[in-house]
Image (cartoon, rainbow, N blue to C red; front, side, top):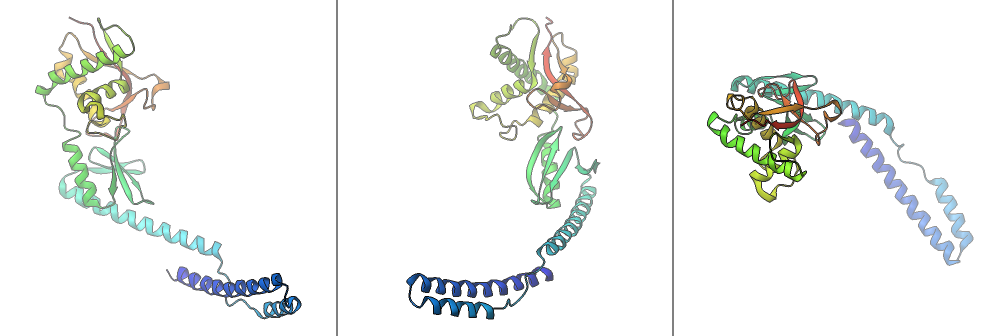
Length: 283
């Protein structure tokens, strides 16, 4: 940018001139401090200072800042348009849906969040980050979306539901036991606590509790939870799992509730905050 280059040259000239002034003042100070030829040193310094003229005025840095900020805004807009257009073309070719939710772009079942300043993106599912640190390269973003859709969001088959139900019940019993509750009859476990116990079961003691770490993510928990609770396998049993809707004060609080999308194919869409899961006390 020409304005930046001109300002850089002007400031460089000013710095060079000021360095000469600094050196001249330093020599005079040393002469005065030595006590030798003090008057001559001060007279000479005064004469030299009168003869020093700035080689170039400082540029108007405030005005330059405004022009630079405007250029940054224009380039960001051009970059965003190009990125979105390229990504849309790739999605159309790959048969992956792309749209908008508010100001954000949606790709497949995910909400795409972009930090244009840092040049990175992340995909979100059900208010939870499913994948982060994505470079702003349309091909890589689409590849990550397809990978997560086929792995993280893969719906458990009917054959996997009985063992999954056993895992959930075991984790619920641990939650109840930790708080000193009764293990007889109906069981109730808060969902954030249940997620932690499920992750411990899947990953062992290496689980740190960080929602973004480990292989058993919160997103996977949501998919398994919703699939199990709404399955015919569950609704046809005498002891059934059911979800407890969160009270208002617990919604949007990750420590007290979990957001479950209404449609797993639209993790960015409508859904419900649930605070607990209940296993009924049937036979």
